[in-house]
Length: 408
Ligand code: HAM
Image (cartoon, rainbow, N blue to C red; front, side, top):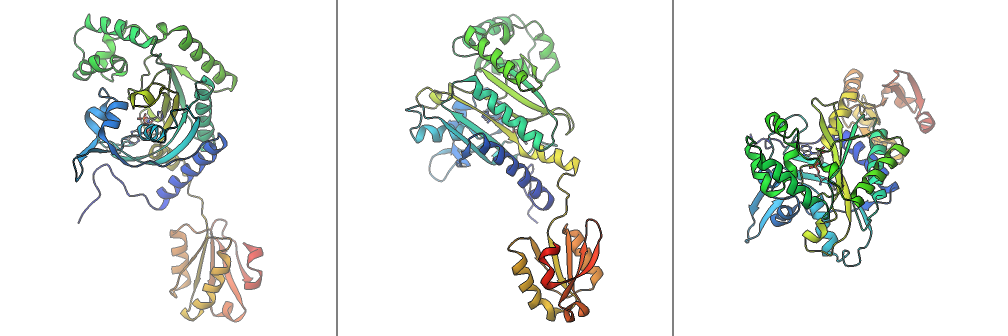
């Protein structure tokens, strides 16, 4: 017996339906915001993620599925989507003229994490990346896009935002923070490692002792340059204007190193402990880091499995659908196939090819979640009709085959 790997899951039946529902909703909303589909490879050179997600992140430090391929390339299963999309933007030379592009994507991401509820080693994200737009209105728009997606999916959330500063103010803040950190002792090993790589990552350390030590640490919000401060204020006023509730958390730094200015997370408490269901922000410096011409980028990604877990609790996807078509005698199957082919122009039809007792067919139809049950027995075969049962409201009747379409 060969089982799926730990932290990796098959997706089928109700779960697959939930997945499709989430993707369909996200795609519809993203298209309304002017985004188009992009697909980039699952396998990339490791250097892409080391340079973008950053050496201070858990993702690069501990979680990459990395190996040497048949030649001598050091490759990695993508742990996130942004870096690959930025690479594609540069490789297609769109950075040269700072071409505005708005793309959405979805698919598998791989992180070697300790599997638990809402945390997998292969999981799926829906994400968007917008290039060439410097305006903070773009940051606000993608936040509003997520609000629209969660509203359509009837998912409650808490929105947390922060500004991480830019090339002007961030280095000075880092310096202040390191001075403060150097004057303290007792930080955990992760914090000590991050101090030299990207000190702001220490701010969101989950260790209680580290958080106590950080109580009087200088905060980002007090160190923003006038331009970052102004953008952050505009972002907040746009959200207020659009009646989106949010909280400012100056310790929100996100787990990836490429952000500057806007950073945000959508949190849900509907799947146990507070879980991030989506996160994103601005990453203007990343294009340059990856060898392109400096430009502007902003985006987000949401964890589809986490959204699916919330939908499951609400039993959102349990609505019955489709027609189950069957017979009590195998000699009727040819007639049923003709009926099915005609109905399939408009409806989803599952045709059972085997004759069975009525009760057994009803049991099957119930199991597969069909809404309408249609069956041909001897009487129905003679009268050119079908036995009809609506499995949702339990209504039953006999319907002439010629009148079928009007009755569905
Ligand atoms: P991230 O915060 O690392 O951001 O991931 C985004 C979302 O993916 C999380 O909020 C969470 O819902 C989900 N997620 C992360 N890890 C797991 C896991 N192990 N199992 C299940 N779900 C998970 C990014 O990936 C950035 N690329 C987002 C972005 C796009 N920023 C700008 N553009």
